[in-house]
Length: 250
Image (cartoon, rainbow, N blue to C red):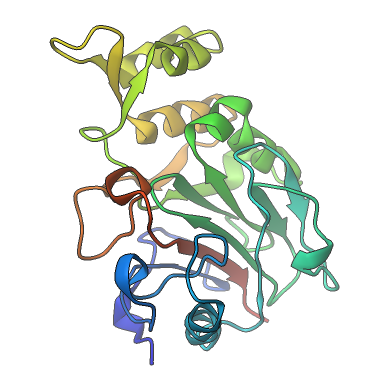
């Protein structure tokens, strides 16, 4: 059984009708590098064990999550009452105004961002690795909800922290070309020419602020350093996936 205490509930002032949580690596049945609550079917884990892990998560939800076919892009899907994940084109974000439909994204270092509006009529979830973030996945998720950005709030879930995310000049250039102030999110490595430490949380906040979203919470995790709670692709290579999930209560 997956206990509620094994889940991370966002610390944000969401309306009473909005529900959300983020899974950790704890509380499942998978073994080895996938121990224990791996939710990814694409990482080499036993599908039967993944199915049991997903069933344990499903027990905390009003409906089956809409699992996306994530490709590190910026496409956003609108989850309707009859939406099924097998029918979806590749996408890295989902939004919905349908009660009980669960938007979800899977991660293992990439940044999960959960959204809701102040009236609790819309929710969303975005998978923001650096490529998707640079391609505008957060801006497109914001635009997909017919709500003034000033009435949206976002929660930045567990991702690779600023002391662990080493990137090259190409990543710096991808962000600085879009917004010169993004340079503040990169710190040059000493004795490692062309290498930088990137702060994905700062980059996300900059993008959200520019889109008009100023109510931003979370952003104080590191999946790489917290080995007991989080899967990390950067740390381990072969590993499981966690999920951020959000929905509107009926």
